[in-house]
Length: 255
Ligand code: ZN
Ligand code: FE
Image (tube, rainbow, N blue to C red):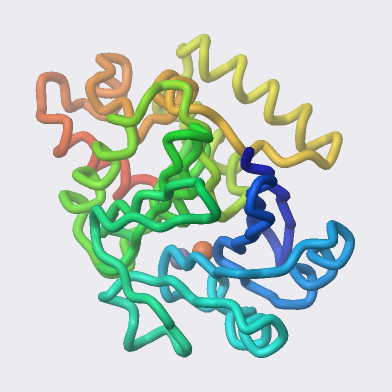
């Protein structure tokens, strides 16, 4: 069985500690900092075997070297990023498979936010660690890739089973909610979801994870086929990719 421990760090980052209860193997997804990971490992009595990096940004790899030094763990990252992430012990590509004990994780390439961005999917535990590709009610900014690339990448995520739980790397949900409501104010699923997320944040709980089905119902970046959104953007009948591109552009300057 897969246990997932959420560690909030920095301003709004989440580190995920994954622990296979059968083999006792443990992985840290995007350790921005080492110290909180070491503390949690100690509390749980776990030993770190792997780091899974989604991409090379500092707020995702900042704890890599200290953790590797302290635990001797392997560092997994995309081949594309293997030159710009220090200490990588295994470079992976789209379709590669990793094992945490007996649990299988599939690597899916999702360029857009960065060109080397990858996500980690565990079908058995029905979860995806999606870094900065998809956020709850939002998606990653385009630092290196194009909107067309990111749209293609998001297609791979929404093709996963609807019950798949999405673990993104930042708590951006309430700011994303403001933009989502501005482009689709009358979506009842979105309205309810925002209320739920507001309650979670008021109780200092993460709004992560959400499922693919929930995001499909609420996240405007996954809904460029929505007539309400198309109307709001004055883009009725345009392609999904064109509407997505415009949404990404509008979000960049949204206050
Ligand atoms: Zn990033
Ligand atoms: Fe980030």
